[in-house]
Image (cartoon, rainbow, N blue to C red; front, side, top):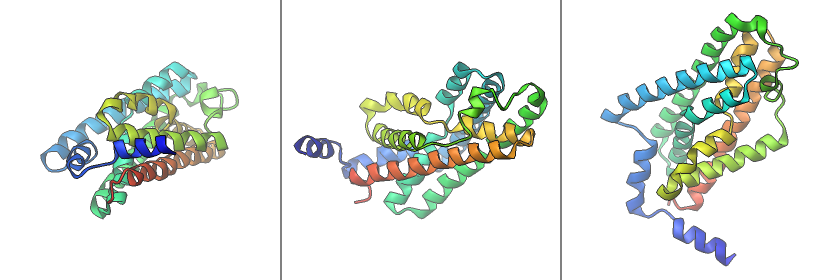
Length: 218
């Protein structure tokens, strides 16, 4: 317990730390347009890569998409804003997550419609592994949300964010949703959507808990 207390004390937010965290998570004023352009470009590219990885059943390709996917930032921004009691920031960040999710599904559906005849929904491991959420997926998502919030709060561990992105699948499940919708595989589409929602809510819960424990909302 003493070790845990030391960790919490050493990593608690001080008033001087808040502007730096806000600069990482919230892009306002003149910064917002540039951020939205970068977010859109990276989300588009990660969706193209992930959708093709799913269609080709290529794990390496899907992992590449996870690395560049930009969704962790607005999700952590949403939960940080909630902890800080800033409703407008929370809604703006949440809206960006929702808009990004719908964009990924729509683009993946378009790509899937072109290649739907080459996808075997019974043997493709990138699909079958994402249409039936398990308890283990919940554990991984909670751990990823915890790691993401902690890494965001510390500059010396920020390099671990790509690893967090790989561990928690955010773009690939939505690509599976889009590809499944294009093929009228409704059960698979729902299962993949449920996996994404589980991951999303777990990151919100775990990330918010970390931010609160470290004193962000105090």
